[in-house]
Image (cartoon, rainbow, N blue to C red; front, side, top):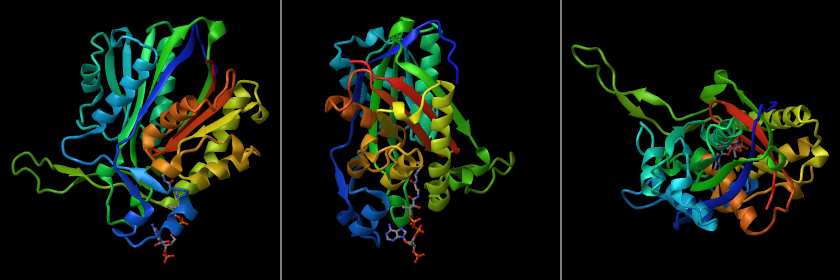
Length: 335
Ligand code: ACO
């Protein structure tokens, strides 16, 4: 997608947070009939972090990740104009971003949630980019955070092995066009396939006697694993190619491929479809599982911390998941 920008966008800082509690594949095999070997072979996941204890929610992880990002650049939270929280697991259906605004004391920031499951971070980054490049806002905190452990059927071995909890945050600021780091994007949705991955609301009570209103609750994550696998491996490379083509760039110019950390097999298959060396994949799914909207900023923060990414590296970021929704963002890293 061509960007109509009057300003550029730069990445000032990243931060991340995961719960302390670890669940290994061996521990999982005591809960459901599975094995470390089955899980590692099919997914590359060895362990995941889970938010345990009462009254803890996505807000705790998102707040910690945001404060870490702010402290890295000694930025006052009062400088933030907008907070976008990408999450599908808010602790309030009306949204959780405002509670994060209050917790980090970003009193001048507008705050809202954006729900797009595992594509949530990419969509939030693009949304933030529109506000920054049009000159509407100067500084934006984008958070990807999910606590899917609260929505998993822990007796369903086909889904419970995949997911973990976490949060990642990134602080973006407008800048001159010549320092711009956000090169372009490409986004897609196919609602016809929504049933392949959903967390459905279900009417499960008798209707109100007079009003005929049915009330219910949200169920567990439901997934057709094979269809999701096929979707990711076929559609994500197309999105990447379309995005690069629109920027007059080629796969050879990619320094790092930062994909939503769904499953290592999916990441490898996508790299192979692009004829890209698997050495260029940024990956940490083995330690955290699939953390939904958190996975991309979590890897970005780790890669940044470990000094893996160098000045001027081109990073191709793709998210994909429920909706079905998927998309790509291309950035140039600047230290
Ligand atoms: N341990 C042991 N056996 C299992 C497990 C398990 N945890 N889960 C399923 N099995 C069994 C099945 O019952 C089946 O047995 P059967 O042949 O006797 O019926 C057998 O293993 C094969 O099951 P499949 O579902 O065909 O396994 P598959 O090879 O497709 O792997 C997987 C399953 C890993 C889920 C794969 O389909 C996949 O990676 N899909 C993508 C899922 C994904 O990444 N989702 C999230 C992406 S989007 C987002 O992040 C929100």
